[in-house]
Length: 332
Image 1 (cartoon, rainbow, N blue to C red):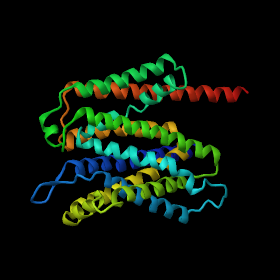
Image 2: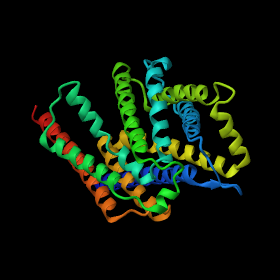
Image 3: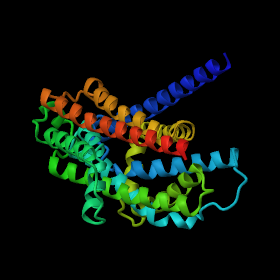
Image 4: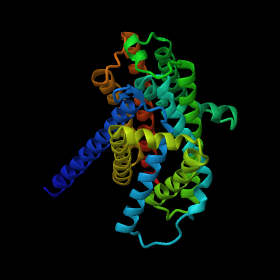
């Protein structure tokens, strides 16, 4: 009876994590698409300063993580010093800025799909630079994802979707997304290195350090000279308070979503978190297509299923690998 109660509690915790991650990031995706495509005011002005979203997100997440650390201090020493995040902070500033900027040139579903192919640059770099050999199933996952993204990019986009873009330019949009992935790869590798060197560093410490540097770099970029775009973004928000509220909600969704991700990883592991976030991306594409008026053709839907088949197979391979490792531990 006791084990049944524990099992039920675990199921409820998992459902709580799924609901939290899906709600926060799907709504954040809707807000991101709204800010990048919506026309504000009687003059139908666009919010062109999308890099400002990164500054706002970094500042809100920095404040949020600082509050979490003060409310629930770990009490342990040996955390990574704040200055150790400076290099990862650079790539974590440039990468997401490119991903957001891509929304001027490609639709939100296209951006989500392109950014789902993170394994492609990782495997290319691993093979070409480090001579790593991957298994056939791993190559199959990559082929499915790369083929799906390529087919989606080549398929004809509806005129309704194109009309919502500020500057339609598919090659530039996809190029920005893949540069985003390359910078993300460096950011993740640096974070892993910091966690290895300073094992007592918590997720909140990493969030604080990364967003501290992100805020500094974005402040310099957005307000470092008299004609910098940050002043124009502030002026736009003053004239269009609706845009300012959308940006604030966007940032809060990101902060809440990171809370749920950290909780999921701590309770269920990174594989469960990967599964939840991957399925969330698929749902985001569906929501964008249905609610935001980005209709997809049959070929594009086929491309979406192709990509998520590859991602699902990758998750299954990771699960099998974990199962084998657990069996080895039991036998030793």
